[in-house]
Length: 242
Ligand code: ADP
Ligand code: MG
Image (tube, rainbow, N blue to C red; front, side):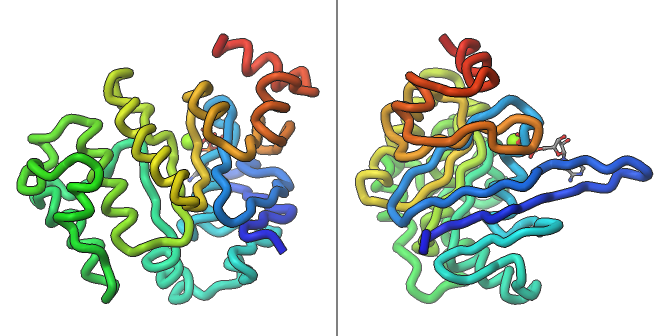
């Protein structure tokens, strides 16, 4: 059985009298230790997939199996425990607490689990040894995002989700985040990443899922998707990044 499996997952949003199909019968698997990339234009349904996998949103129908358990059947209490202890989430805009230092932001996450890593050491591990007592406003975007990654790691999660982690960063700061993700990949951390960094995705991922209009157009190994896409939709999308 795969470590992560979405099976015929559909997510509908009801907005007054209209229904938006954010995810349309999405099915895929990800193995333990794999790094999967989700590609697609804005509105394709990428964040919806991540939010459902991360237990922040519930699907309308279908199964979401994580390590043998179907989290789509979880009670709110079980979902809270899952979000706190099993997974880590990194967002585009860091979401650090503004009036807490880098170390305090990490410790805040650590407080809810007994065996959390030492915050100071964990920040030093991503090159922030001399920034631990700075507030978010005193840090660059790249530094703030590294704090956010350390915070996500504080609970020793089994899976990390990243939703466009470098989209708010200048190109020169993007590299330092990708480097941290690269180190996590070397450690065989299971990761699902939404990104538009194509050469990074091509180089580092095990699996690429391309979405449009809420469904999976095509998925496969990075070599296949980037060099031999079979769907016209995939070819058109990738052409924008050449
Ligand atoms: P992506 O991350 O690929 O840009 P999303 O998963 O955020 O796409 O959104 C997919 C579709 O679902 C979009 O049409 C979006 O407007 C819609 N959507 C996402 N979240 C909500 C929500 N909370 N309420 C209503 N519609 C939503
Ligand atoms: Mg999104």
